[in-house]
Figure 1 (cartoon, rainbow, N blue to C red):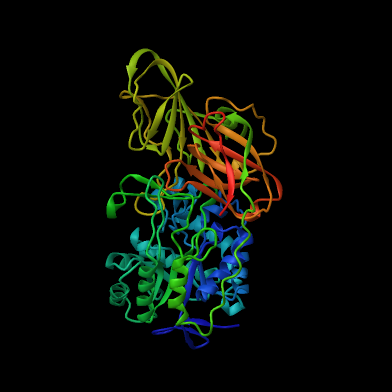
Figure 2 (cartoon, rainbow, N blue to C red):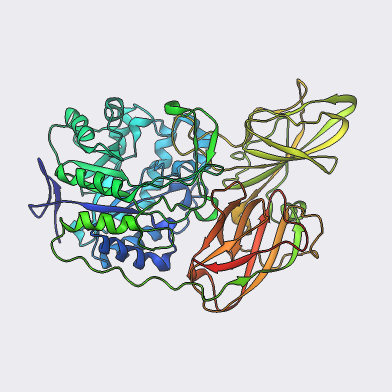
Length: 585
């Protein structure tokens, strides 16, 4: 058993000064059978510690219903086996470019901006969640023979709120639940962030991508004592659908890391290995500058992050440049990177065998239909990731008027009397062609990811401001939701022969694999939707780019026959051109 403490200037392990050379690797973004390889890659880069967030919404999809909370414990056991310490950041908010910043949709749907405050209802939910989660951490603390050396309280709270009493109560809750290792906070190196997010008696750290000396000077103005640490050194960055591919020069990242270490500080590379936003868990940001009140910017499925270890587990040029810097601080020679995971042996074409229209999918796997005076939100329909069909009648006879989905979040394909009439977005909420009555209007609304950072965090999804015909609200709105996880176990599904018109719907295919291993699913001509391989949701695809293919982890594939399903939400390629294929990464 060992003791890890915070000294006046250093971290101390059994009284001996140590420097934390950590790397972020999120267990929920990497297939479990590949954890060992990725953790060995961290060791080979010169790191002695791994950091992970914990997404509350992944593990508590409904209040009091838990899903594989033990995954965190298994990951921490894998870290210990790999010879790494561990920093755990359980939030409750994590940002992380993750759906809703990790907060459950049912929580923010109920509480709105009362989440992340001392509101009694929020604290009750949090106490129940931490009571379930924290045994996975407490039993693996370093003073009990495990790898966990620090636990973070909240996350970048100074970028969001100023409820000091909430932070105090959160700290008490962590201690009451058995956390004995040092607690830590992390915020941007700005005065208002550090004053809002720091907790008396708890080590404060800062997050940045460059100009380390300036950042640490700001931190020292707030905390004269304690070891310096950059909890998030942004050595790359994330991407948005419809945006540009983003990279950071490897030498520039290495120089910035060198500056951090020359300051005598510890560091956590964010990300060391990003992984993938499988199953539609990618979040979204708001543009518009520092206020984060602008247009929605949904995050892509890949979380490669231009990290030193790429999405597929390969060392990049940045890996080798950072390894050179880190090697100077290692206690001995660094291990060589482990062999790469198996790659798909030969390209393989997916043969499509049938499909079902969206209406049939919704009738078969959707939730109950509701009827309400105004459109219910996704939260009210218990849809975390997925889509909702709204249906309303335009009474008549009446002349054509504009149809407006007020407060639309985020994207709607509209049908009038069964005919496609257009696509609406948050920025373009009015149908181009006016609608006359009597008419039946359907809007298939998709969430593109809940905001994970800033004051718009937790905002609801769906038609949030009413459905208008000219200036008149349309009431008696019928709504039915389809959760993505309802398709994870498809089983026997009644399918039709392939159509000729490229209609949206659920498409089934088969692919014969020889030499199973890591692969990319190529989707030329497909517009927007989700893909499953052998029941594993590989995530959202979208022709908007910049991402053009989906990563399929090798453990998902099997020798011989494999099953592929696509939920196309807008437009499939025409018959004869529905090309789908797997190729090695």
